[in-house]
Image (cartoon, rainbow, N blue to C red; front, side):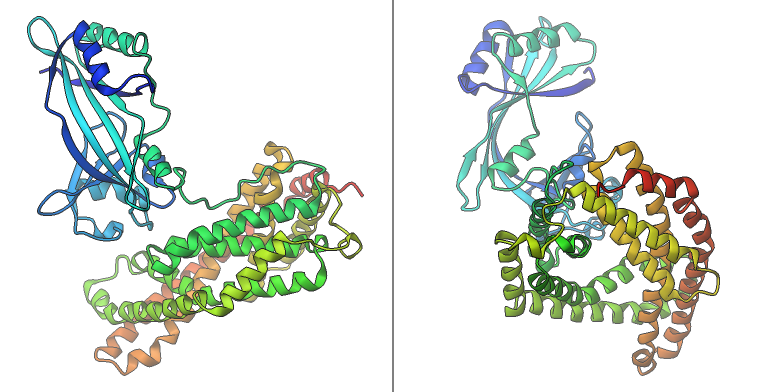
Length: 521
């Protein structure tokens, strides 16, 4: 038997149904047709479509006695299959050890694999045979229907997959010529999974983490700011169900990033908004940030746990079991508080008020001096100002500076990064991108320093509770090792600070910022 060559998928035009296509093929070729098979499966991916973006296709097949995840890592590649327990979602650690986990682990990371669309399919396998009755081309003719939110089937475009057999290029060419010529088939414009997700009411691109607002120089600042804030509010809302269901930690992270970006827009473009209502909305978003903070801090601690405890001797790892269990317990408590607050009246009132603020009339221009000004003028002025502030703050930091100084610089760095991410498209990419790159390098060391500071403080807070538990003394000794490691991480971050800051604040960079982001007034 010859080896198969890569598969190509085509969609049937509306005027041609699968039986008619099969009849057309039979008039031109010797076709062996297997009996049609009815199958159902569920499209599986992360909320942000990481498997699809990596070129893979993952489905859940309801096999007995257990369901199975089936992955095709790349088009035409062999499938990888593993039985899994029934679940509303699968994290990497939930997958059985083996090839499937090895393939998916680096792709999905901390994200959960989720059911995105249910599909019913009628599939018929066809074999094109030569005079010796050898299979020279394989076809799979399929009709699909996605199930909408009410469980009703929504027909999808019928498809045919064509796979050649190595050593028989001519028959493949003839089959493709017939399909794309007389039959009028076209290359499938999107994967069947994308079509199914769209038919089921989802977004094939997945949940976004960044706004998609087209901005232009000269645009009024108030209108541009509201458009960006409205899109960011949509990202918060899209991540809310996954946050409350605790599907994976990234939902909460992306929700908080969208809130931080929104707060940054309101702060940096504040003169485009009326002062009184602006303060109300800034306080509301600050409250959302505060009630979600403790759970996120513990998420980060637990996500970093394996790396922090790496290479410890077995007895130390055993002693740390109560520490991790206590962190998990505290995280569960923080999550309960988060859910109560985000499902409560205070949040509904705050968010309803914020949406009304974005949808309403901002009021007289005299109360908002930057409202009518060009966006590139206002945003450019703020970029220059925040950059200059960072240069001043960073230049004053030395080996003896307190951690608060580095944290303050990090906060200003986030402000600058959000300005560049949200509004940097107004300026040439070859100017903005190197600036973002140097800023990311600086933020990396500042982030490592701050994360280590927060995590060490969290671990120290566990000491009193651990002391009264069985195995407490051993746990405290092992805990001290982790705190020491975090202290070393802070030292390493400080050691790397000077080099990263020098690149960020270099004289040529300062000149570039002054020249590129200058205002018009």
